[in-house]
Length: 183
Image 1 (tube, one colour):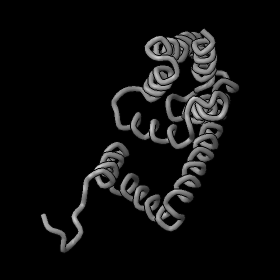
Image 2 (spheres, rainbow, N blue to C red):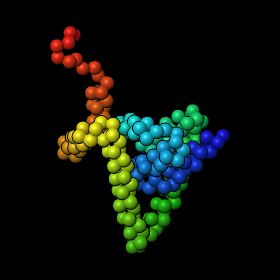
Image 3 (cartoon, one colour):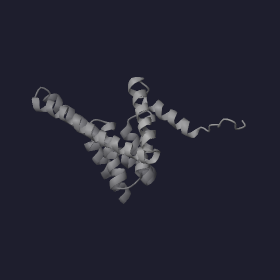
Image 4 (cartoon, rainbow, N blue to C red):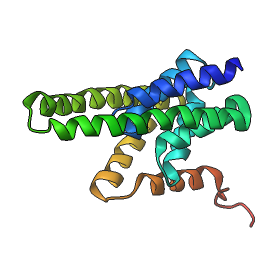
């Protein structure tokens, strides 16, 4: 029962504070699952996030479902999903009603615009954290080269991040023959 209470509390907080959708909630997921409750390591979180990004559907529900399942099986999955989805739906209904009613008031417009830099900072901190981990595991030169190549492929060439992740996984997992080795 304590596991489900912790799952509910963690994903309820994420559901209530994850303003802006899945990408803005990623640091909140990491805070709860890795730092606070230690349900997974930082590396496991990174792997889970990468795989969740390759699958269709909302990121927050995939992460909640998987982490809940990992912590307490099917019941944990259901608790985490309910805790992350129900508050979001209720808040969305209430907040959109208020915003619609007061959409022409300056402070409402300012509030909406003020959230964007906060989410940007949260994502930047998470990005730097992942870059540090990559530098430690791959070496800084390879990490920077992979990062630059990824940025170019995604931002300049328009390659979808899921395609890039699948390609990298294929490169890592497919056996390659060295020259001179028999077939």
